Length: 211
Image (tube, rainbow, N blue to C red; front, side, top):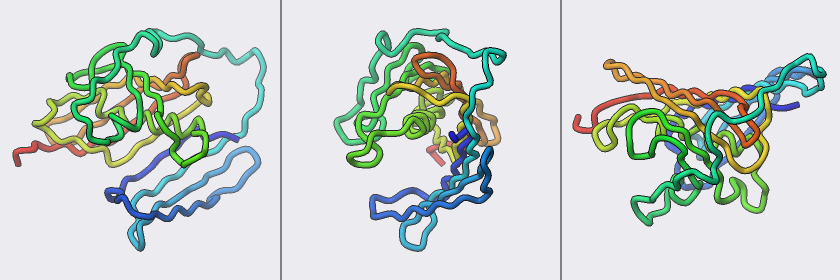
């Protein structure tokens, strides 16, 4: 079985302290399962996740598959130039290579993202780990508002995968949409080196930093 949809609700900031993870199967099944997990720091619940797992099979040549990329691969992308030497996930946790757009410019962008280190020490990152680590960048790399003037925080992340990713690099073709009421969404088409794999969405809280 493989995860076809993953959602996470971000309830509180995650502190740099020991954390507790719990997981359960909410809806068992041989073909479709609903699983969930929760992240705690002491008695405080920080994040709550749910995922649908669907059995994998081979339906034959009657189902066409999408292969190929509508843009360049990471080998020709422009690397993100860090704005400081301080450790931060976008500077030291991942490598970003832009084939269109830029981290510091507003508007849509297309960027390849690769984890620099394992999520769990001494364990090879799973395909799902690679996708979710990259998908959470959608509202940042495809920002619609000026950096330093507006705050836009995602309250959740939902990723939909119809094919499991292959390789280290995940690509986001990302764009953000914001209303004057302070609510936005970020949407990303997801790719690996062979072609499309799914979609990701984020709900955004938006405000002016001067307030």
